[in-house]
Length: 481
Image (cartoon, rainbow, N blue to C red):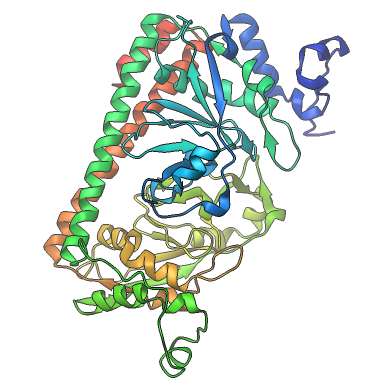
């Protein structure tokens, strides 16, 4: 019986829960703790102050990864959870949008995932980029404040309240399903929200607004670095051939590349490589050493205490997220020496070869965890030739992403072979320009880190108001900004 967690519930209490749920997980102690807190604290239900609208089931066959002229950008689960970058949003045609009677997002729209694995279901994010006409699909809900309510100061405050752990745990509890969890109307409407004073809400709104300003500044600086790279590589105005037909003889095709698939020989790929190789450049294998991690297998995964295990879905070019999986302490202990050697150190570039291929991220501190075998570890051979921040930007740019698009194969999951990655061509621009770009990249990540810190302060303040009182929360905000 050691380690067994037991809670005892009276049968009479079952009439107050959704669908008379009686599975043991529903009565996990962390969920019962939330019940206890809101039995003491004043609260309001989601239904009293807010409502939500489901997205439309757009025909995925009509999705495009590139902007369609007069098309609509579609937010999906990965966009809300930020496991996809903004560049990966898909687009649908205006006609498909009209046929499904879709609606457009406006700035400060709150988006919530309605389906997914337990870590992802019920996650929220704010849409603050109205520069591109956008909508959302059926697996996502747009949440908004009701017109006739006066309890919530702003959508930003509602967003941060929905982001706190007590709301997240309620939604995790209410979500139904075995393999994939789903949130229904009754799950969201009964959600208990803390009743916060106007004074605290005003301070929270100001804090979140400052966070979004920093986020906007970060994007501007990062985009400037990208523009400098393309300008120095002579690619800022390059228009690539869109022809889908290219005639090749056997000698110049299969005998050189070993590939017979027609997509590989599209002219745009030849043009991008040709343009890079007409200037100073080198292959990736000459610039970095490449190593890979291990694939322990799902038998060693745990959601309890363990070593963080980072997979491709746990990072993108903008940063790392909390990994969904950990490795069991038994596995870590049995492979202690190997795991210590596999932990990526500061300065390592993570580079994905499976799934979302070609995503590069520079570690700015040692990583307490290991990565999956789908993530390569790149170490710069000579920083006097190429600066890590510059190389990462080049790897994430269309200069390399188009080479990944050309090479990667796989009917369900894309796979980029290590031998192909080694031969990727990278432009080597003037070192002073590299330094200028590196400074911009570091400034952009400093702004991003500050934006994230301010959001965390706001979340923590809400939790303090729930666990203790608002005076403690306000003192914490004053101390942290």
